[in-house]
Image (cartoon, rainbow, N blue to C red; front, side, top):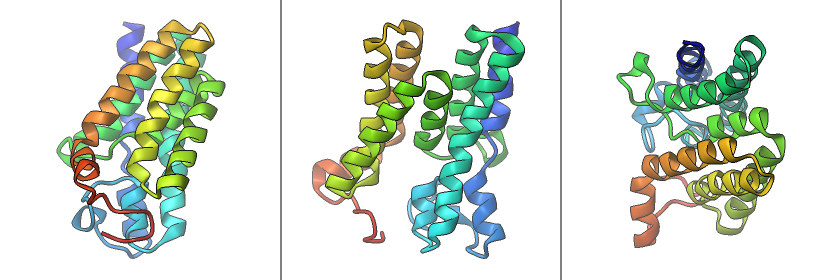
Length: 194
């Protein structure tokens, strides 16, 4: 029962569509009508509003971290894992938006930082490193997820490692169109628009 409660708490927090809310409040309109149509920070960046994109990134990561920390405080460590999965699911499949949300990268980052900070830092380093070298945000996000899983396993944290591996595979799934464009050489680069 605690795990279900934690998953539900995580899902509700994760499903807050910060990108959509911030874009509307900032006068950028409905973020779902531009670029990839999703509600994450990369798509918010396509509005040209860097501040809104940065705020979206921080809030999407923050809701993942908040779900984990709240569940851990209220219900214990196993519940924190369930809340992490719930937060990711809420961001990717929010009930309020017809189950069409973001791709989960920033929320995954927040979850990883809260559950196992070294894995979260590994995620951030891989994401930034790959994105800086390739100038492709999607490649950085996908690399970050697997870096978090590897870091967790390297530290002997098998449960966190398995969760991060599952989330990394789900990030691949949410990026399936990006993967097709990467193979075709047509994936947009950061700052190049869409």
